[in-house]
Length: 417
Image (tube, rainbow, N blue to C red; front, side):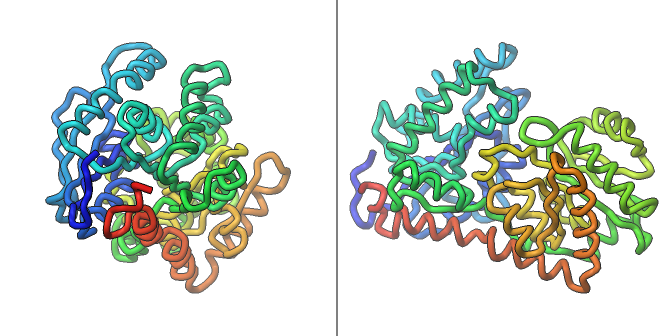
């Protein structure tokens, strides 16, 4: 770590566990890079991303949609073609060494890690270098994966990640959970209040605001232009922490409730053929549903074409500690959201402030009641404008800006304490 004077510009190593072209990187990391770019006390930022699959072998052009002369990028490339558990273990033994080489070359003052898995890498680097680190989007990732059935209690990935999360709580200079629910839990566990600031997944509310012209253009392209057509939209994946078969039953229930005027838009990284098979299994053909993988920049146009949105997150105790980026984007477009209970702070906000409707598949009649509630919200004359304000209030990028100010003020000294 460099020796700082008051005039020394900060050098920040930003560690991302997703690939450069991953939509989560675009939607959650790039806005925070912009905040760092705009800070006068920041001199340079190096972004490290973890590249897997074909991207691990490809040349990755790096460009941002804002002036970014302070920001550079380098990939951490995962090796191909091996058992996933062996591959992950190899990543966590090799990547810290590569990160330490970047530290030797770039000479950062601290690391910002995005997410608890990236925080684990930052912790392993801290063991060797004692370089201060902060963890954004800090969540109980190991428990998420176990409760979703992806990892088991005896899986080495679960055991290691759970231990590394415990150590992050102990030695990270700052933690930025995405939900107030988790900030309170961390305080109960003994993490000092001064080291914890809640930063929900930020959304550019202006970029995702309802655009009736773009929305009508999409509806015409899809032949959904009739004014009586009710369009539901889902943006995301199926399986893991999200419902899979249950999500398609949810789409079927919405189609039954809204009748022949219902249409569905699905924006997903899954193959269209795979999704079409599951839609066909619940009786939704190509005349009722549109499926594609859309670039993140095009998502606002599709949201503007919809009347409401689905957020089929699989309920689990630790979901109370998450912040789904898609819910913030839905709100920014003014869409009421059909959501499961216990999703971060959002389910409670939705229930209390009319941001959608909460359904619980374990309770008989809950989904039917939620659809009635959703329908009544859409009958409000200015529901999109009102719901848009939820994104402005709860998902504003200023929450991240304020956290950065708290943790590393203009003199760059806070992280040393």
